Length: 110
Image (cartoon, rainbow, N blue to C red; front, side):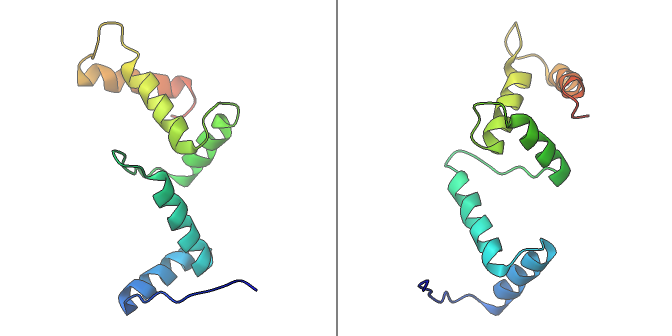
C-alpha cells in the first residue's frame, strides 16, 4: 500500500488548486504531480513562457526527431536559431522581429 501524508494548505489555496484541477480535466493529485514536474524543469536563470496548448502539441510532435529531451529545450533551440543566426552580430530589434516572423512562417508555425 502506498504511503501518504497530509500537507496543510490554506482554504483559499486548496480551492484554487481544486478549480485548476477541474479546469484541466485532471485529478487533484495529477495537478500536483504536474506542478512538481514543472518545478523540476525550472532551473535557476530560467523563466516560464506560456504558449497555446495546440502550438505546444505541434512543436512537441516536431521535436520528436531531435536530440531535445523536453519541449523547453526544443523551443530554446528554435529561439536561439532565429535570434542568433545573424551574420553581423545582433541586428536591430525590428529586423529580428521580421526575420523571426519569416522563419516561423517557413517552419509552419504562423
